Image (cartoon, rainbow, N blue to C red; front, top):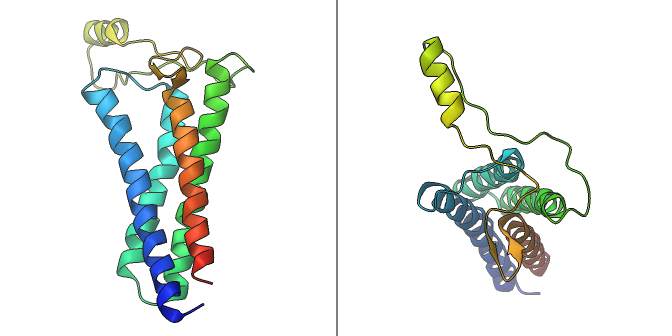
Length: 165
């Protein structure tokens, strides 16, 4: 493999490691803020690895050597895959293939609020269950789409890293 092909593979992997978690987080936040879909606890679990992957991908653009960049991108790919695996678990809970491991309700902070205001906030907070999909496309929930896109994306990133040799 030529040095040019190796550089192209690393460049592609870095770009994908940045775009995939950014796009998935952007979609999640759009569904929440624009679509009014409140995330459950397991939805938040899927977001955390993407935040970490995004940070590693940014570092891969601002650091020095190719070996360090490749290591950071590999770490980002691993975190993206972890989010996908959490998505598989969450989708299984939604489809009732297995039990979830949490009560999965949204919490509201009442720190610094009067008792009356705290009670009003608690009563107004939506209860979001992990075992009921709020939205689906072609029968696949958001957790399912996260699983598909994250696991596929992580595999493509790794294939680009292997391309670099």
